[in-house]
Length: 182
Image (cartoon, rainbow, N blue to C red; front, side, top):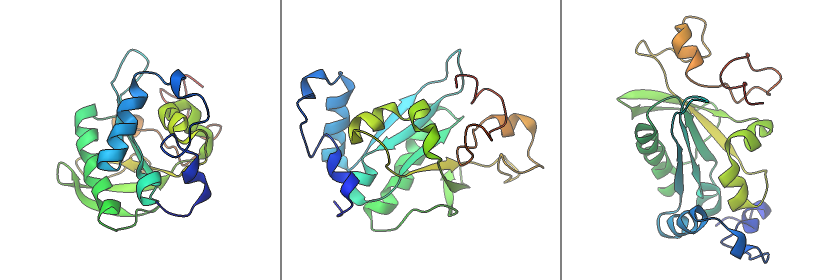
């Protein structure tokens, strides 16, 4: 654990008298973070929108940003997030703007810093773990078959809609499935 002050506010470090109020998922998250260094939350696709997945615990255990991924099968995203989470576990830094090859079906991914105004929409379990933002989150963006990312004009519309652009503020984000619940 690093000396960053936000890290000591998590449920592993302090009991604020509300542990009895934790729902059934919290003990699993806590145990995974203790045993493995992180936990992956998987939110399956439903009638509201595409699935997504994100980590909890990387900031606590390694001082690294949490990771979030959208628009693929939740199990594929779980595997990809675990591959990336192994990097800070091995001592490598993850940062905004980095590209990492071979993460999704042999393709590279790009990391983008998530705007804090999206946290309550997507990362409720992480907020519960850390007690409140800020904790760093990087969006893991995956390319289409031609290696184009969803923010690039040349990307097909279907690919552009498959993932949000969480580095933009909610008011700047193009209207669509990712902003419908705002």
